[in-house]
Image (cartoon, rainbow, N blue to C red):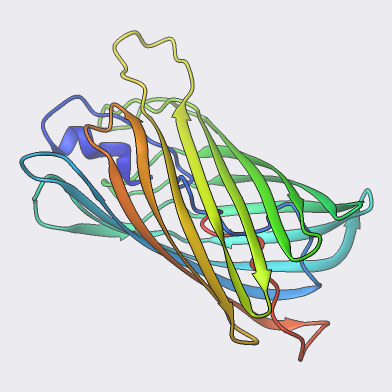
Length: 277
């Protein structure tokens, strides 16, 4: 999301990135339905990309509200999502710039398939933004997630797919469609949670021959603790490969999930379903 104009600000051809921050749903059992209620989830991260002689640093904060409604759609739980990114960026040693990113409005349906398998589908849109350091054009957004959550495990794969309504920004940046994949394999031990995580992102093929497609794949580890009711997760990721980002990125993440009101009040908070977005 902050990658949209990094190239242009640095004096090289402008390149786009994913509207949905790669890695934002890592650690969340996104395929599984939440208990009925309202949840506040905030995922914040700080990353440094190794670009010499001066690197690029960014902070992305992703506060969101999720309402797991009592309504069902074809047997699945209907969940409504609103997320408002807040971004700060220093490109190659330049002073920090900050602003609001694209607001995400979405509806998600999550089904329990049996045998501890779950599946969800999210449909929504990232709204236009006037902040120059982020992607500005509206995006149709879809997510397909599958989760196994038996025996204390969270084994989740979440595909995030974005389609731009307009591939050119007013500043001349080119916006290709994108595909992200967030992966989680954590295990709960009492109130503790630990395990490996990974994510990848890529710009999809485009008809623009001058556009240099971006992509990355990162791996890391997650640790979490359920304070009841708040659930806290922290993870660190490091790119192992990248394409046209000019350097590898190391990023630290912190997420808090707080149930504001659920039908299961007084029970430990579940691991978050939706984040960073």
